[in-house]
Image 1 (spheres, helix red, strand yellow):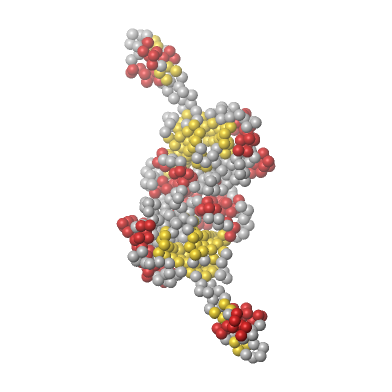
Image 2 (cartoon, chains in turn blue, red):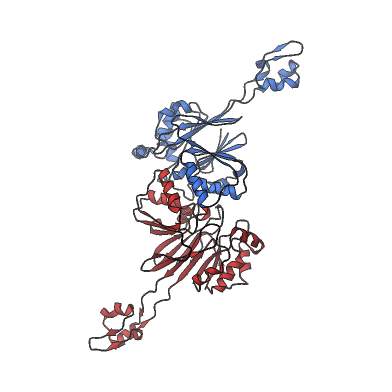
Length: 301
Length: 301
């Protein structure tokens, strides 16, 4: 998995502070997460291939997570896209996008599938042969979901030397990769784990923005390889965080610690702060493995 | 009048090619014309004071003229605006903006007045003590208006020397500025034009985008000081211009010539062309006083 931050700032887009959007690459497939105003410009800057986006996940319908979506869809139309596009987001997203396309008399020449969400519990919303995506219900001023991206286990890995030792013909290899034991033509039984290794561990990425401090998300994100958790405010503005249902850097670090995640990335910074390193300084005492998001930054998972 | 081009490119916003938006300054008041995605970022870059925008004119509901408006309104809300905001645009604009604000549960704390247009003839849509604004019906794929900004005549200008010669007390000055003749206390009659000059000529600016070549707009824009006319395509793509109801640079120049305007500014360039100077080269043989728009360029009228 490779995560590219297109924007990680809250509220209002500015020349050097873009609102929320990310691209997650999973085995060659691109998934777009949130789409603030100007996301399409950021995609071009980061050389994200527009045609590779097939699924877009929108956390909530605040402008800084969503107002770039209709423009992106219009651009896909102008680029001559024909492939289906799936959009996952809160109920209402279909109505507002459809209305905008209708008023512009600009219907897409590709199929637009809306998967509207209103469930309050975590649900599976996407599955293919490589990946599952679950919602992570968050606690914000409007209905909001984070998203958990979970790679499926890969195939078992063959150990070449051992295959030779047991003289195993190549036409058994696929069965071995799938975890099956073998009975050779001469009746010999080969247990799978004699000649294979466990699949590479599958990775999990959790996106949690926007949300107040909320321990009920711990079971959903436990042990993930990377957690992106919003930290709109510094500790001095904890009261504002509470009032607006956002988090502080310390609160994000505490969630990461309690959930025993491997790495924490902070983002959704308020523009009131000039120096984002203060978020890092405040979080670090509570959780070791913490980094800051930045527009254009890439995280390998 | 001072015109600042925020964006003058068609279709899709790119890092160095912003979609349509302009700010017209008239005697200290700012009027925003169109609002493509990312306009608020361009406004910051050009140091346009957000609080000075009180009236926004939207030509039509294609995304490249309109998708930045909801984000701008959201930002005005976050900036704590309390002053009224007036929005003039095609019917439907109220529904779509209201829906977006509703879904974000982000009602403005200032009054938002929508002036929805569906008239097919030119009408007066704004008037204050300094300015009148009329619609200019255009010929595009969806209902579209250009806008004519017409300064009102100022006051007559006093000639100080002559006032002294006639010994005219200062409490008559305002009457003279308003064009009235005087009868002095001793019965002397002073004709206004003995001691005043005509007001400075009032300026007119016409914004015409998007439109096919359309001679029916000639009477509306005749003799304007500045005409911004779209020229999406070069002559080689005249067929595309016809199909999509846009204009070529040559067509824009012909309109300028027929309307006897003082200056022509070309804009709404298709991103297919690398070198915009070709628009100038094609237009110049048909109309002398032609210039190219560019993002961030300022025209004094």
